[in-house]
Image (cartoon, rainbow, N blue to C red; front, side):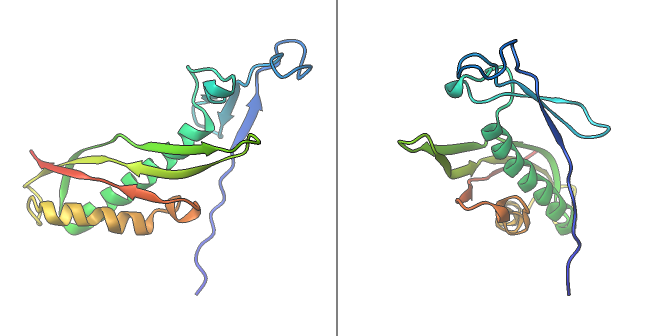
Length: 161
């Protein structure tokens, strides 16, 4: 049986022409805007190591954030199904990228570090073991993690309110 297909559309507009276009490598800003219909614009740039603006999100941060958000969304869904009441969720995610000698690069790993707070109010109570186990299940279902060619690891912690 074929699954559903979903399409996502965004517009990325370069806003970094400082007057000379790309006349030289340092002649232009890497700034851009990421937009989707009906949503706030996200200010983007490149990593400051590649002459980007430190005050704007870079594609590498957005990739790490996408993996973290996908995991969180699946985790909360699975927790609700399992009768766990999650009262807080915070992930200090970190991605590592290796740059090669010719300027090429690739991610070698993303580490998710979600901290989950549970209430004993759910039908499953404050089952810390179940809450920990749901990270593996969330990873299995995360669309973004299933789409990358590098390891996405999870080191979750759980506390009870």
